[in-house]
Length: 314
Image (cartoon, rainbow, N blue to C red; front, side):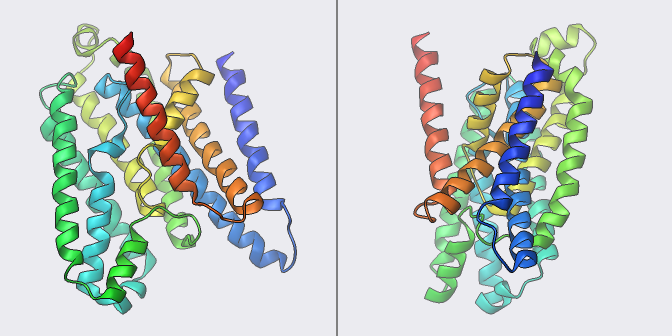
């Protein structure tokens, strides 16, 4: 049953991708197909990365209300963009080669994420209050530093920094997509290798250790994969905080299964499907009258509030 549901999700993603690429296609075909294929790849990479990362993060933290995006990834990304504009200037930032910029963002996001997770969770995944508070405080600190740095920019540089800090799929660099795809594939393979042990981790720290699982080592390995996935998606399109929660919740509803070999690809496919269908609706049918990340964030935040209220009344 679970395999059939995964096949349905995969078929839905393939169908949505085909419709997105072929809808209203007119000449010049080569240029338009290249543009749409690049944007489609970015949508799939971001959706799959965030969806899979959220499932792993929720298992390790033993909390279905959390998503990696709430622990400061978006604030760090905004700070990195602002510092690059300050250091290089508007012209230098605009002329920055795509690969070095992408590499710096990936390395910074991964390094800070692993350092944060390692320091906060070294006592075990049950210390979730400290994780959330640490992430929120670091996010506030980085937003404050960003605001201070932005005051040092001239109006043109400020506008450039602002534009670079919002999630967008309208101007995707194909070089970034080409480098992000192998990272996504590697991270998903690592997640698939960890899926049997993640199943045991559902029993909790003590239960997993009683079955011979090195819980601390599993936690760090899983969080390293989460850092790779979230850093990749953020570097490609910018921060989308609540997309992962939306994708993981819908995947859990569509695939009522506890095996991570099913949940992780299910959440990845669901995240990709949400972005592809959403971008098609806004781009083809609504004429870009709104922005997809804003709607996704609103829906994800609403899902978060519903889950919190349901848990409080349970």
